Image (cartoon, rainbow, N blue to C red):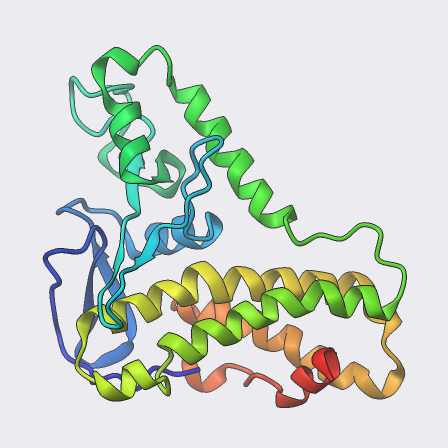
Length: 266
C-alpha cells in the first residue's frame, strides 16, 4: 500500500493538522501543529493509539469529516496539552521541561469543542491533570479492547470478528488510497494525500493490530494448510505499522496476502 500521489513539499494552511512531505522521501510525513515542536513520532502515536477519535469521556467522535463534495474532506482533531504548555494556562507545571510538555505522554487527542472546554480557566478544577490522563488511558484501552472477542469458540465466530475491520480497511484503501478514483482524478491534491496518511494511522493500522491480535489468540482454529497465510498477514500488519511510523523501509514490508481475503470472506 505505497502512496503514488505526486511527491512535493506543501503546507496546507486550513488543516487543524498541517502536514508537509519530504521531497526526497515521499512516504515520509512530518507534521507541524500550529508551530508546536511536537515530534512526528509523538503525533503518530497519539493519532494511532486514539484511532483518530476524541478521547474525552463519552465523546468518541471521529475526527475526520467528509463534506458533501468528493474533494472536501477535512480534519478536526486537535492535540491538547494535558499539563498546559504556557505559563498561566490550565494545569501548567513549572517543573516540566519543554520536551516533556510536547511529548506523547502530555498530549491528548480531542475534538475542538472538548479542547476548548478543558482549557477554559473556569474549568481547570473540573478537568485536572489526573482526569485527563485517566480519560486518555481509558479511551486508548477501549480502542485496544473494542475488537476483542473473549467468547470466540469456532472458526465462524473468528472470521465474523475479523470481517468488519477488514472491510473498513478496504473501504479506506478504495476511497483514499493511491489507486482510488479520487487519487487518480486529483494526483496533486495535498488534502487527499494528507487524508490518506491519516487513514493509515487512524483506521488501517489499529484495525490491522486488532486483527493480528485475534489471529494470534485463535490461530489454532485454522487448519495447517492455512497457517502460512495467517503468518503472512500478521507479519504484514506488524511491518505496515513499523513503516508508517518510519521504523522500516517500505521495501521491507511484507505485502498484504491477497489470499487472506478469500480465507476470511470466502
